[in-house]
Image (cartoon, rainbow, N blue to C red):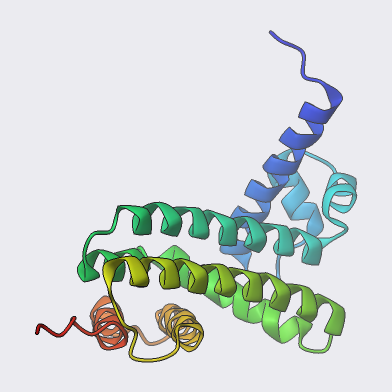
Length: 200
């Protein structure tokens, strides 16, 4: 077996902790999750979590930042292949807003927002990740809307905020009062935001 360098070992530990944190937050929620449980899930001591992320909040920030980048990468690829308005709408549609894990993750995110509302520094870091993500999505939509001659019914930055909030709200609702067909709701809204191109 090839012996890992110290840097490679650190990177592997980092990734293992991210994966373990995601599983524990999903299973337990943010508030109930502990550093000890996350470390044990990954097979390390609690010191590894503090060394790599500074604590539970830092680990959460790293997870959502990685998730935001993963979402952007998928969106870039889907929009690059889009040739029609329907392709754009499909690219913007969440994989499954009725998915139980998505609902659990959204509930954990709501816990984080409530817990950090009185922690300005942490709240600012979360907001910065969200703003960067939204700006990237707006830029992608602007680029591909121009390419495909699509017009948004509202400013793109407002549309991105609205769609994000709607997706979060629908996912959170699934935990307590599931909607009959949340996917249909999102599709209808997306159809409204990107109306069919008028034929001349």
